[in-house]
Length: 272
Image (cartoon, rainbow, N blue to C red):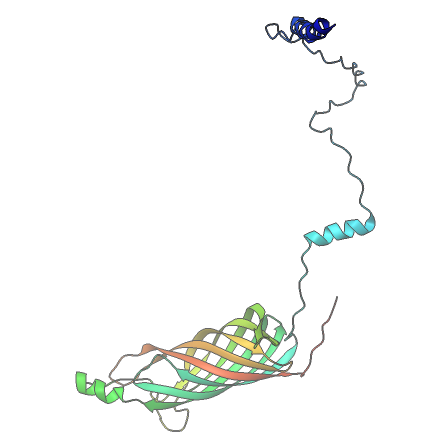
């Protein structure tokens, strides 16, 4: 009995070693896919359909979902915070020349404009100037031993077209929104000078010279009826400083600050 018990594990081990293992020398059996059912032929006259066009049908959008999808593509535009259309504008400006180091000119001017649209206005503008002789005149005369010729401008009257293509808004001290626009202007008119012609005397001696001007600037609108203006305007006109010198084209470039009041004082949006 003891001998049989000792030989039993050996017999089981020999049987396990005699069992055949996996044979990797032979190729694996081929797996054949099941045959697809033949497709019925298309009816006569039907167009062949591409394989890429076979897509799952999309679920139709509900009316509310269609509106949301359209709103994702359409960007909303905010209404303007200040309107000038069909409003009268009365303004005051204080110009100062920036292109004459010998005879500086300071002035005061006024403007009356009518805004046909928010982006276009027609304005009548006038200015009166005082000429200030600087210390550079004496230095120039001493250095070059010559006379410095200048066209002494007394005033001007211009008819301008004003175009405002840019509109925006800025935050003031982080607590208030101020609207602004940027404008370009161009116009024709007359300039009066002290050396234009005889007889001389009075604030506007002689006749006026034909003039043309271009400029631009920026305006802020802190209220529904008030605008603050800052701009630069260049005016060209012919003048003859002395009888012995030929007539030349003079340049009057001024930087100005001012304000304007709009009538009526308030505005309303006109929706179509």
